[in-house]
Image (cartoon, rainbow, N blue to C red; front, top):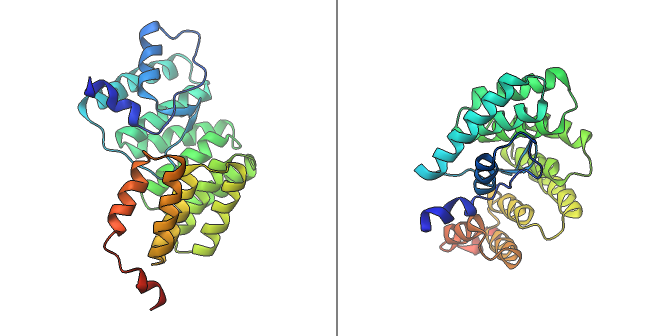
Length: 232
């Protein structure tokens, strides 16, 4: 029973709509995986996961499904985005980038491709490239908070903390009380050595999501930090 619960804890969300050709088995698989927030849009927001064997078996099944879907219909950009994101989940970043670039060759303003490219580049700590893709994603979809979050993470990676905070504040305006956004603001404070502020922000994130593991881990990480260091 515990093994069946594990995929539920993954924070990426399931696709909202499914191709009409999905079999019952595939539909159940995708619901269990909970990998995507919407068709073509990954939702890791700078969080990266270790997968157990059961999770990875399902990821591999999804990979096989979308490889075949793209083979049958190479012009379907949504399927290609999901394929790229699944490669990303497996750690095959080069193939993920290849799929997202292929989408952009057909539609340079495809938000999901820009967003997911920023996700891969952040994972690889290629923050300048992540910043470029995040900026383009924000221009394409200025009302989508996820682009601003990625922008904030990229700026934090570049140690441009004021810009990181500003981007995350924009995200928070679009999605108030989102625990991911609050957590990322805490990460900016922690990166600056403002441990007292970071602790308060992580606790705030837990007010909205008491089971938010990243915030719990962050508090554990900072429990022995001397908050007086902020004034030194």
